[in-house]
Length: 394
Length: 98
Image (cartoon, rainbow over all chains, first blue to last red; front, side):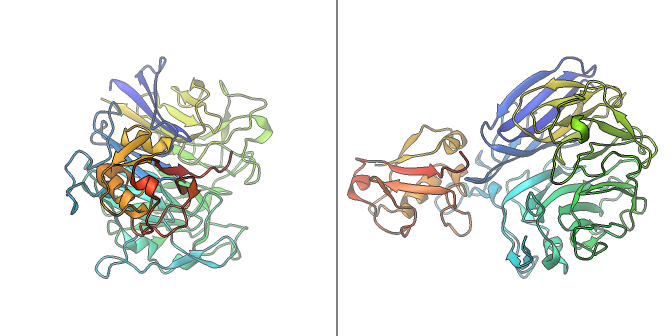
């Protein structure tokens, strides 16, 4: 490996942080797409220079950007003339088109989901929260969107189609928005089984497909959520993030609205592993790149108070797969700190020792190059950080 | 030629200046202006009006000759000063949130 590249999405643009494998000196490049909300930037595992970006605005809608040179240049897929022209001879601009599939052949009817007040509300596309490139094809990528649905491209983002079996699941009318909207925020691809995809939705729960996204089942047995009428319901849980280790994809870790949980049977059942955490509320959860039972969370005081307990920013690490946690504080502010760390804003590299990275709503990106034992802010004062991804470049 | 003013984010997206000029044809309406704009700058499709419904996005407003025409029918003829290129058709991001 030759370099580490950190892809940062913020409220006002994207930034790319680059270092050699020593991870001591970082160059900061950006903002890209200045002024736009960048929900997620993620690279292809098979072609690290292929980057997908979700650029979004409550005013002007959803834009998909792509780079084929590691972020030096960007384009909207298809805008180079490769896209099929419309009647007037111009490209159709399909790369930004996310339309729920209601066709008879592959789609599902546009139904309703539960609204904040318990009434039913029609599905409405708002934005792409998460982009998950395929493990073996740089032109294939999944997009988790709000209102919750899963889309897929097989042509590098030129066009997207919905995998409608998820939205059309019979429990759809019981799904509800979390505070941030009804978002599909996590997509995990099983490296040992190409048929298997996991996803998670706030506030519906976790789902699994064993047929490449055609059909789905809720996998929420063992979750207990006091804030819904039936705390052990099949759906309705506000799952904040799930994570797996590539070498052991049958084990999943979950940070729920409240509670940290673990499954050892591909999500069929879950058990709580919050143990001695000072708060089991939080957003991200990450797995060490070389130790499948070492996991990281950032406890947040509560859903009303989106900041760390005691004003101390602490990452908690468990080397035993949960239950027993240790606070990691070296290099992190231990007084007067009231930032949040959002669900897609923590990532690990595959260097040795493992590098861990997270971004805050205060605009800092912290890095550890020693498994989390110590931390350093590699950049400060960015706009609020929405997402962080790490690439290990060979 | 019709003059159109774009908000900052759409200028950066289309890599163009604040004001663009468009050949719209005989009928000068919101719809014909936006058709011409999206044909010239396909990357703006879906940003001013929704992809499928082609309705104005909720946080976008249109001004013509000093009037807010956001809620007019998209097929209503715009004032002569717009059609003559004397005044620009303004596409504005609604002010919200300070």
